Picture 1 (spheres, rainbow, N blue to C red):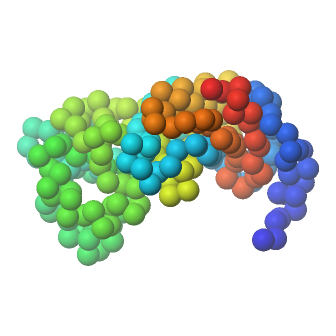
Picture 2 (picture 1 turned 180 degrees about the vertical axis):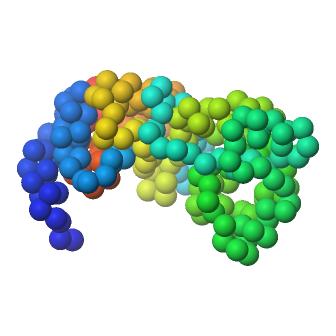
Length: 230
């Protein structure tokens, strides 16, 4: 894969063989985010879990203290009083069965997070094939299946992110934007790592955090020493 000049220049600042301290890694990532737009800073965590075993799955959510820097559009499946509550909380889209054909047949996906009250999950379940592969299916573990729609919407707007193992046992999550200060990125990173360490399945033996890489959207990854985080 051919890299652009900016990437090649930025990559020179990063020693691929070094495991950096968190503060130094964050400083480097900010310096190497040289795209013309405000790049998202992402963390990629390779774990010692084997996701093929149900008891080694990791899935949860955490509210980052400084948010993600992204405007998040929330869709809430709810009826009556709960629908009104969702609108009052600031959800962009609120509805019930009438949204099914719009999503299924018209391919409408102008939202980033889906919340549902428990009684609506029968309806939402019909959208599993569309929402599932995109990681948009509401889930009780992530706090997106709940009767407290006000809290759910407020948390999401405040910077709540979901984390989960992918098929290769890696967790990929955004922790902010390149325009954030080093302190803001550090706070968000620490909050995320603490949540993931708490979510460690008891059946995982040996080293839990195998590798931790922080990277801007268009820039090189910087490795953080995982032994200093556990």
